[in-house]
Length: 317
Ligand code: TXA
Ligand code: MG
Image 1: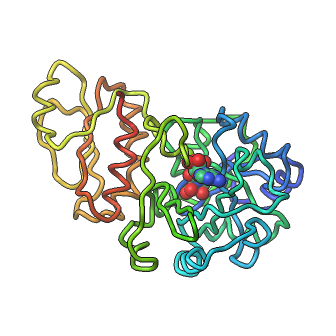
Image 2: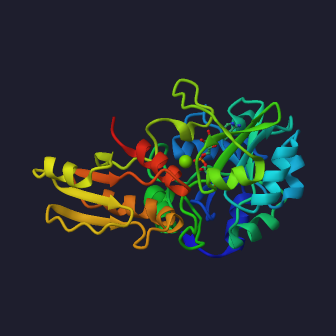
Image 3: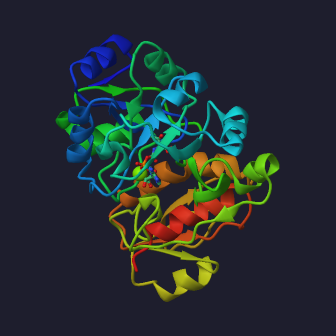
């Protein structure tokens, strides 16, 4: 059921059930992070492989020490700068954090989300919430309560409705090696914003065999419809005139008759607005019975990098 009633959410969580929660990035599939049985239900419903650890959502920076055992100064600085907000920190875990949450790793991913309803919920709980994005493993992330309800139907008792997500792309993930921050996943905080706080940032290269953050798997966030990413929208349309084509662009209006469905992510070229609209546009495109989705590559700056990252994982190899 889609609801705004926090007491329903609370009682489901106390009963060990999982629910969907809104965050500023995407909706999450949440359960008591301190209960292995609840966390197991998240993996089952999402059909998520156990090698893929989940993020622990906390109500305030003060409770970070209940989850993480070591907080390097750079991590404290980042938390101070970006929490509540779309930044996840991967830190050495407290011993009591379940191996199910961390996929057996010695580290745990933590963030304080910035959504008023979810912060109110967290405030009323005496445990943090483990929550991956509320989509079946590998599919497009949900940015509305309706997206979540469509995915899981009656298998999910409570979908807490906090409206459309204001940021629209998952959190940026930063880990630490010898106290130095390393970018694990591009996301709603841009690299430029991070570097203003911690200086030049090393990036972890993509490694499918042993993904540090399986959000880095090369095929992820994927529509069912064949999708490609290009710098030459017109050229690719011309080559595919026999197909039912949908197009996703940043700003430029497309006037080609061959295009059956057009999504413009930000009419005035604002990367933040484009990020907010990205997944809803992909959901809509995927529902049009198209043969091919052609997406335009974004300028490689600011959130454009994060958008390109998600689009590049949505394409069929
Ligand atoms: O914005 C977000 O981060 C959303 C909302 C719901 O908070 N959550 C989200 O969760 O995107 P999920 O499960 O779709 O992605 C979490 C990512 C995965 O790529 C996972 O591998 C990585 O976080 N992760 C979790 N724990 C980790 C750890 N200990 N070390 C490295 N990566 C970790
Ligand atoms: Mg996800």
